[in-house]
Length: 276
Ligand code: BGC
View 1 (spheres, rainbow, N blue to C red):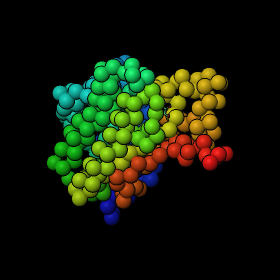
View 2 (spheres, rainbow, N blue to C red):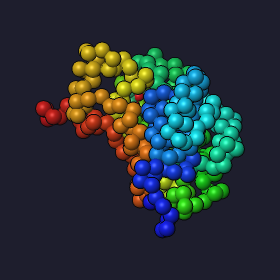
View 3 (cartoon, protein in one colour):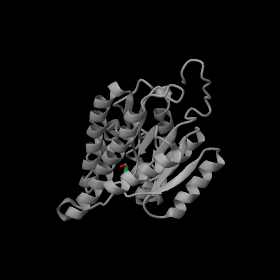
View 4 (spheres, protein in one colour):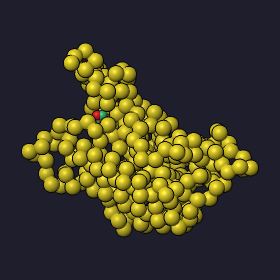
């Protein structure tokens, strides 16, 4: 929805908007970057390693008729995040949408987990979301609402996980980071709503990406995974990307502080389908 009198193209609901997607050269981040581009946004494709993959994503977005550039930055490093935002503002002038997606797993049995494994996961998955959100919010506040572009001064979408609520043995660093993302998102949403900044999360379930390949790439693994998913299929990155596009658009203008679970029912306690 654009302001009265300004044409709104339902096929390109993010026309004239500038988006940054972190961790956008593979998996869920890549799908979000492509979907936002297809919806009309110009996209910064953030990556840490494998620049050739970022270039590939940029090529796809450009073919869809939007602009795209790559920006290398480790989201857990304040200096690198600030340099990436400076690059984005120079290239695109502003930011309207941040998809806080970059994240990783470093799994270990609890008693064997090293401080390094704990700190790496918390700093990328949680501190990284804080650092990127803070830079985005600074620009949203500087620029304010531009009615011809969006009803909001800015939109932040935090990539959380079903593990913001489901405890996860062998992954305490990851589950703790996503529990942290939940309160980071909600507290930001509460603080920033009066400034017309919307902050929401998507909590993916088991989506087929490199992060969890071992959980779905053999028939035995998939069978065991599907016991946790009432919908009986593993998700695709596009399931998340469609939700992200909608949450970034004015179609969801009255939604802030929400976590949308896109998980085929994984959070519905599937063990109770036959027990209890
Ligand atoms: C994790 C995946 C896992 C899924 C469901 C995600 O957040 O990154 O490895 O398959 O949650 O457990």
